[in-house]
Length: 90
Image 1 (spheres, helix red, strand yellow):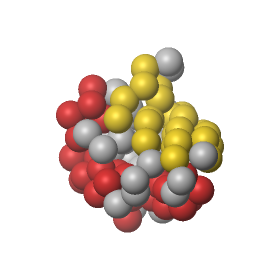
Image 2 (cartoon, one colour; image 1 turned 90 degrees about the vertical axis):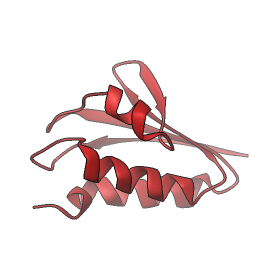
Image 3 (tube, helix red, strand yellow; image 1 turned 60 degrees about the vertical axis):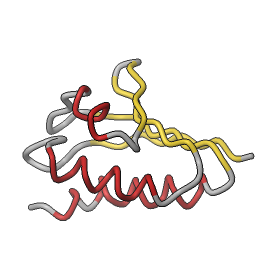
Image 4 (tube, rainbow, N blue to C red; image 1 turned 30 degrees about the horizontal axis):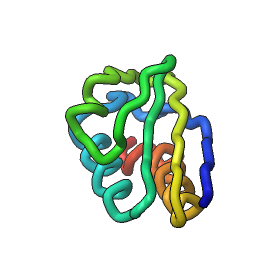
């Protein structure tokens, strides 16, 4: 079983608000593996919009993605790409 971690930075101006969070949840939910987002030791389920909102992560925040399961490599690549692409925002 794969377990992967990767640090990502929030670079979109609005940070984690409703639109980026919905994109994260949608992407994470496509995978069978466990997907966790960690901010300063606080770990939340990336498949839960409410838990992601509780992170209150602003622009410039570095988060850690942790994916554990058979499709973890694909999941972590997909999620990291969302962050790199600023969730499709300017």
